[in-house]
Image (cartoon, rainbow, N blue to C red; front, side, top):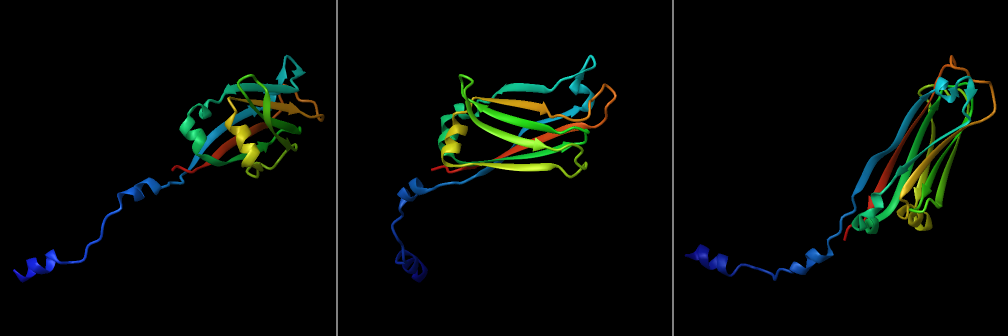
Length: 172
C-alpha cells in the first residue's frame, strides 16, 4: 500500500509532443559519380589521333524536390591516373535541360603520372555554385589530348578517371 501511495504521488511533468516538429537530420551521402579507363590506343582511329572525345549523360538527381530542397552542400572528388606519354585536359560540364552550360570543372592532366599517385581535385558547391548544381539535368565529359608525342595503335598506358560526390543534406 505504501508503495502505491508513493508511486501515485511521484514527480511527473507534462509531455511536449510538439518537440517532434523541431527534429532535424543532417545526413551525409557518398556516391560514385563517374569513372572511365581508356587505353592509349583508343585515342587512335585508323592511324589518326582522336584529339577530343566526349560523352553526355542525363543527370536527373534533382528532379526529386525533396532532395533538391534538402541539399545544403556538395563536394565532387576527382582522381585521375595518366600513364600515357601525353598530357590531357578533362572537362566536366554541368548543363541544364536545354544543354546550356551552368558550370565547368576543368582538370589539367600531365603526361605519365606515376601509377598509384593520381592527380586529385576537389570542387565544393555552396551558395550560387550550389544553385547551378541544383539546376543541372545533364553532365557532359570531354577529354582533350594536348600536343606531344604522337600516339599509335601500339602506344601503351591508359587514362583513368574516378569521380565521386559527397552531398550534405539538412532535413527538417
